Image (cartoon, rainbow, N blue to C red; front, side):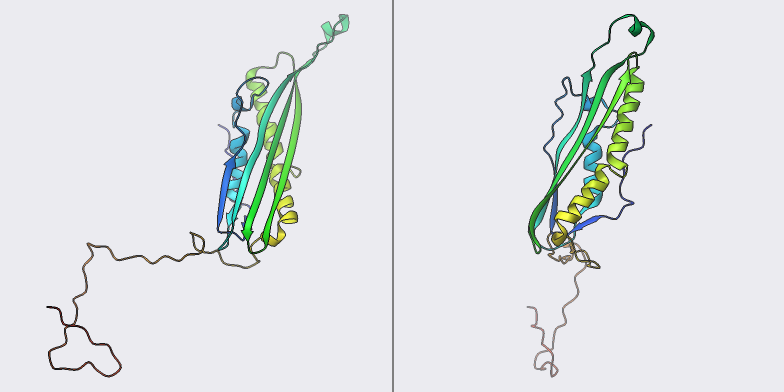
Length: 218
């Protein structure tokens, strides 16, 4: 079983905004030449997991949108060579191209508004007669490379965000604002919880100096 992608062990990208929304602009066509929906782990799901794990709201105002622009895997049939020599060689029959692209949009943050975008591609060919299981292994290797290697989307995305949106990152050492845009909430007592018995001041006695009296209950 393949290990799901996980980025919780990495330092999060802390934005000085109150809300982060993840949008999927990429809808898998599910028709040739696209084969991303047939991959062991769909590329769009790996990209979404990265955004969910790493992009965090850390402020009290403004919002950010992380948009998955593309997460495609395209299959291209390669031309076959003819002649006697072709009978004694194994030819490459398909080329696969993986493209991952995301954009982060920030608006209304204390540091202003802006966008950052990152795109990576990977290409591999397979030989004629390659089984479906072997092709799926190639697709997964391409996705792991495109997501996680030093030139992959995870690194490239963070680089672009810190370059283009530096003013919109949470200050170093800042504490995370409460959920809900920085509005603190106070829990109300449960209606079924026992209520304290009000203290009744006997008639004719004045409250002690510096305190508020309690109105007798009737």
